[in-house]
Length: 163
Ligand code: RP5
Image 1 (cartoon, rainbow, N blue to C red):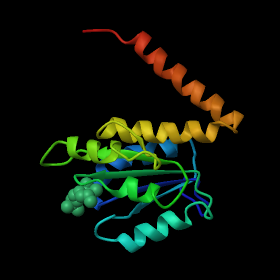
Image 2: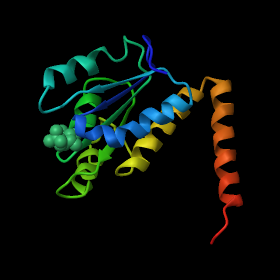
Image 3: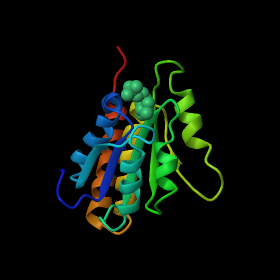
Image 4: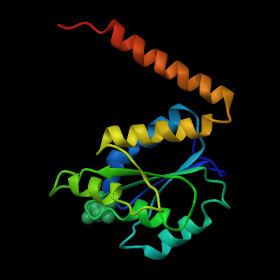
């Protein structure tokens, strides 16, 4: 669900990050979370990034999922300008396979937190699930749907058979 009053912002440094960040979008859609997806580059569109971060709280965002690769400054620079929780997703870079992205995102100086997730698809999915968890803190219906998701996941593993 993408609507006029998004609760979660999904931003990424480049169109090339979409293949990864689409997994966050898919999870949020599955849970029916109103959200928006935008390209916001720390390096190529710094003014857009500043505006996005500065207006996040007044626009009602409860979490920002920020994906970036390489010199992945986007999550940290957004977190520097808002106290809305920022969930950083390291996108797998071509040259260094995302280790550069991971270290750029996870090594924040004390005082400006970014929650850092795994490189690539797992990180994007988990960042979205984490955002759902944040929203579920004061939403009993959403918490029940998260529990149901976990039960389904467990059931699938229990029913899995090896060839
Ligand atoms: C970062 O640089 C983006 O997050 C992307 O992962 C990486 C490469 O961007 P492109 O050159 O593919 O646009 O800003």
